[in-house]
Amino acid sequence: MKRQPFFSVIIPTFNREILLKKAVDSVLKQTFKDFELIILDDGSTDNTFKLISSFSDKRIIYKKQTNSGVAHARNRAIDISKGDFITFLDSDDRWVDSKLETTFQ
Image (cartoon, rainbow, N blue to C red; front, side):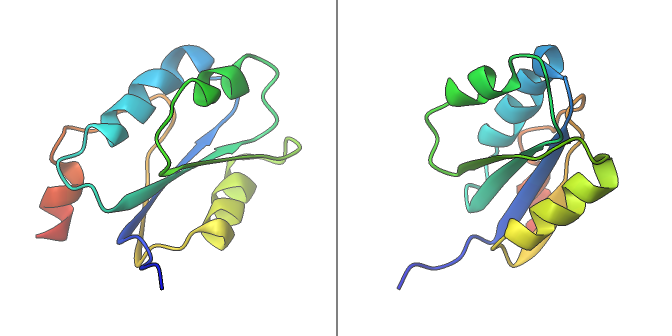
């Protein structure tokens, strides 16, 4: 039986292709590796899907919905999540490499 991830990292996004790469990279560079990364695309019309498709990390889960607002995107991502703990990152932000490790301690 596969163990669930410890953290579910949720990034809601809407037309943030230019900034989203830095946010995703900051999650993938975490020193604490036991997480899933859920990117909930709230109806983007830019190249968000193409950007996310360029990552090969199996911890990334990409879902797209009709534009319904950031609160709905966060709630839908929570419904999808499988982690013991949920944490959010805005698509125009980034974390230091030890964010999850520090949170775990």
